[in-house]
Amino acid sequence: MMNRLTKMIGAALVAASLGLVVSGIGQAPETASAAVKTHKLASLPKAFRGTWYTSYKGKGRKIKASAKKFDISTYRHALDRNSYSAASQQYFTPYRLSGKKVRKQTLYLLNGTGISTVRRTTIKGKPVLIQYNEQEHGTSLTIFTKTKKSSVQKVYFGSNPFGMAVYKRKDALKNRKFYRTIDPIVKKQFGAAVKKKVNKGGKTGPFKHINVVSYTAYGFWEGIAN
Image (cartoon, rainbow, N blue to C red; front, top):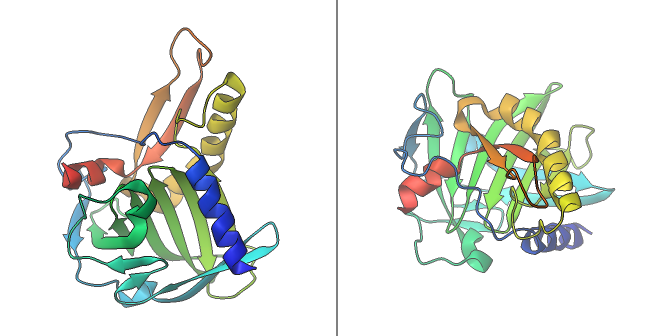
């Protein structure tokens, strides 16, 4: 059952947009915000390790995290610039975040064509792992817990802003609704680790006057990749 959910989520992301959530091109690698400092790590911190569970529409999924593994990804000392989208999450390179406006126990996990912003915290007194995963094929927000079943578990996934899965006006409205759903959670849980971006649909054409507001850490990925 868990494998089926993993495949379903993966398929949804692959079917979603090939458009990048590019924010802040040309920024220094320190930032989604100037207040954020990053520190490259040689392994995943202990607080993030263990087996984590979530569920979607009644179907369970679990991931395992260790010093050198995070779900399907294996530790790599540096970003793999030769990676391609289908295998981009084969590796991860972790960075710890610090700064006055940075939430405690927050990491960036860089991979070939994307970035996960991950936080270890508690919700309603329960230990959770929150992963905001921005990839070339789409974006997902997942809340994992240490127990197999919990009311705080959440899974959201959809296209990147105005990506290739957004063909018609109704697609753009659905895209906007997705981000309106996850934006408050992302902003609250990650603070300065993500940066607000307004993706405009233009003044003419099928996306006229539709603006998709998102929060992204892709500026940091761009700074390292370029």
